Length: 256
Image (tube, rainbow, N blue to C red; front, side):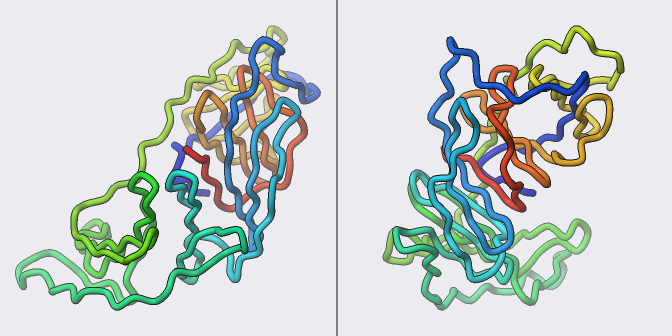
């Protein structure tokens, strides 16, 4: 799972089993929104003290590969590299555009041509930009020659000025380990004591003293909210998992 609107980390949990709980009454859950896609279904959701609430589902013509928030706008790139955004009527693909010709790098440069080109979505404020890369490094495989098109709002505008992913959030949801801990998972960060969840620096997700069968990734969101994702999806906030998990996602992204 890749979340361009959030920093992705991995988690581990340690301790005995426990019920999912509401957030402490003196710690109101912030108004955090996120989008999560699995297969051809996209869910728009928000966090509450009782867990994740699904506001809306959107049918996609193909599985999603990338989700990017540009202010209130949600951009989607499908696995077939079709790009579009979510509107009141559902997923709306961007119209085809004629991209500017991209000259080959100099003959002595260490580059290779990508055919088909590589694609990526970017946000610049509330604008949605689509990146197209036709040339990259032979040594690293990284794209080096990008052209960008502003796809929303119209009209389309092209640029070669470098765009980067929006910076991720800092993991600040650490909590104390449970007192009845009976195993040592090494270095990491505790996310929840109810049930106990710990972020291992190795990138493994544990529940209790065993690797988790349902959570494999963690996406850090705004205001200290963290998403645990895998076969199931749950939100952690201030030392607790919020409510019961829902079905997991292949791709998710927090709204800014």
